[in-house]
Length: 226
Length: 402
Image 1 (tube, rainbow over the protein chains, first blue to last red):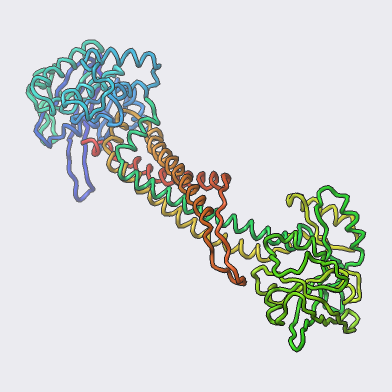
Image 2 (image 1 turned 90 degrees about the vertical axis):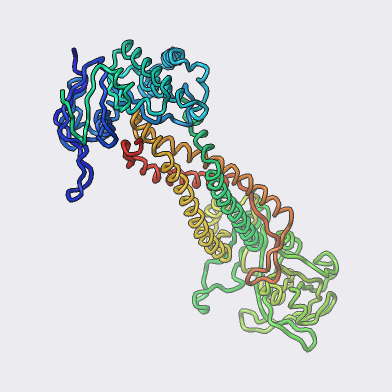
């Protein structure tokens, strides 16, 4: 099995010398291609910080991070931006849809960023809208959607470019049980279809039980390192 | 994704703030265009006055009199008739008017006053001055058919002398050789142009009357009036090269008042423009900064999705550009409407320094002026938005999303 992501002794500290807060301490683990990995832990345990580092939107203070075997910890901002654009999909806790864009535009945006041809974008978005049951919402704006619909659009946006790695932060936080289950089912189907690896932070048992494996973070430490 | 459409939607999301910014920019532009239009019309009027008073080109003798400390004799241009005849063949020339300057004392009975006189071609003289030299109480079209010497006085000079049309006056002058001379002339009319220096102290006689009084056929200057003022420079050079012993001056060299007023207005307008452009700069900086602050989570999301920073900046600059286009369009329409209304209302300005009469405000509507001012304003808006969007680069993605 190919290793998609590998963290080696990652630490994250906020603040300056005399007023430091250590959020992550010596975190090491790896994620295989196509794997569904949950990171659980109470609030403030460092789950979101770990996801941010894995998603290249935050820097580790110490340690090495490899994506597809390539070291990415020392990449420039430009390199990190390009890496996120091509290889990583994000499912945010609060959807983070762009208000000025329609459902169609929100989902199509990652493909446009990657200069995919318009015809291909049209085809892929239409297909995913159907899969997600959102075709009747394609021209609606985020404020016109329910919480569940927004989360589905967020999932579609993360998966449309078929990323190698999907980072999901509390994907079920704004969903009721039915919608959460449907969302997870969808992510699993797309995982199986596209072979993406999923790194999901959650303390929802429904989500954790749905994953292949789980890691527990407690006060910045990995409780059961792999 | 349609960039301008997304930018427009973002603008409409911030409706109230955008409208206030738009109104600030539009009002600033309107102020610049209306005041600029007033300045342009003032410059044009002053140019017109100078050109009508002095001519587009002025030919004077170039030999200074050593006895006058380097100044010219008042009646020193001798070959003017030859020059005038040669100019009549030039299609660019409309009129060539001789003017003989002299001064002395004019008296009526026991009243007398110092005068500055001009010997002129009466018919042409009043024609070229047009609305800037109005005649009143003229007995007949001047010169009348009478063989007697005749004079036109500035209205205030006539009041000083208590003279009315038909009265006989005596002109006393000193010739260049030191002889005193006098002539009895009949007052045939009055003129005024609202400048005390002219209305209080000047008079005009025919060229033959001034020649008889001063004992010389020489004149002070030949004023050349052209069909198009743009041809002044070319004709000035060719005349200067072809006629010996004279200096050919352009109207700009005689336009002291025009240059002084232009310099003053340029400074006033410059200060006003700086203030207005600063207000616009601050307004747009405030709008874009607030937009960035309110949309920092959205900016962070775009960054997380891999949007290159220049593309994020471009979105905000595009929004600022759209606001500036809407604001400048509104500003131009407002300026056009206000200028038009002021021109139709014929609002009178108070008399400026050195004048006794006010004048109607006229605002020029120059599309060139509108375009250049609007482009400068749009440039300022883009600059302000560039400055503000630099803040977007400092947004911490992780913190803004969480």
